[in-house]
Image 1: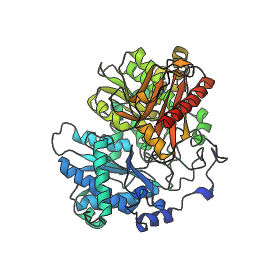
Image 2: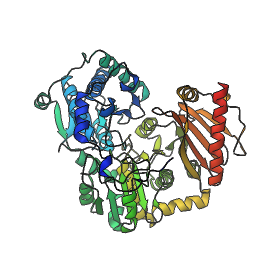
Image 3: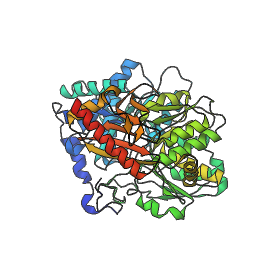
Image 4: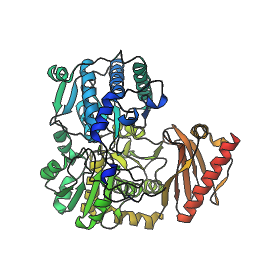
Length: 548
């Protein structure tokens, strides 16, 4: 990883997005459906791209929204559709396009009552609240966001009636249908004007803020936070939760200060990320440099990314917490302090998350449910209560209400921040101090993700590996105890390989957009041991590629 000289510094004018040019490109540029890179492509979190490269343009949203309408009709989903957008400049343009198609298909669409921005978890919570105790007329949703990606990017994802990210069978069908519509010149798209959409009664206002904020006491002990008098800092990073924190502070009487509460589509207030790009990554010490500098001003502080589905926790004791560290602390605290949770509720983690979580789950006597990368794998468990907590190494997580019922089935950044405040309020120690205690009990793992070069053929080999294809018996001097190409928690394919020993592991997955594969690694010894794991992982895979 080559660190940019701009990393952690205020964004210079020279790297700001030309927003007018971006919006012109959204409408004027026409993607070519014969070019693979310009088609609709649903990844782990919907379709993403930028209008500047003809990968996120009006035609993509027209086709994808129509594909969603076609799916709803085939699945018998005829309730309202809850829709929200984040603060990326392409999001509002995509929202208008989507509303026109939804209305053209006779779908009732629930938009923010104030015409503002809507966090991903607020959409998920609204869907679940509406559908509770219903057996017909179920609601679903659309979230318009590319997550923490740079300002020029756009994103568009679908959440079915279970409130979480759609599973692969749904997104595959939508992707296929959307590309058929693109190839056919959008002839199958039903669309009305925005004015018509507003006058038909199909586009309705919904108070997402009150629905979400008013229910927070069901998932977080807000009274304990209030009574503690904690000084809380929230860095909005110009995100979609910007209008939520003042109502939260007022309703629950919190001593809460908002930083970066202004929405600016260029995100010029951001500190530049490691690679010289503006990226609203609340787990990056470079993007979070501003809040880290203020750590001693607050008892606890936190931030969320652009659609508020990720969290970054800043403590006085340890600064910005590594996402894996905070997941382990959150799990340790929640399962010990939520007596109404089901006795059989398990701990959900992705296979590339820290093994510290395994050790914590073992101590708690809770079932560990390991799944592939992607929050969609946690949806069913959170929905039915068989999973108390689901979290991934990229700082996305959610958990059950205090009574053990479902809260959200999509990632929820605000409740992870408020949980850090609850932990500090009720224990007298912040999450950084709690993680230090975990390392004294279980050891201090060293974790890192790196990239290694791989061409298309090698990436295909890695994606389709079987354990038998790898002949190694040792990793960094220790016997290999597990070699996985399927997740033990649900049997789903990893799309790569994970190799474990008693003292460390690595997992390798091909990138979907670059000529690299990602290596996640962890050592429970030291940094030198991790380096050896990473080196031997690349050598092991090089031999596998050569043999294939």
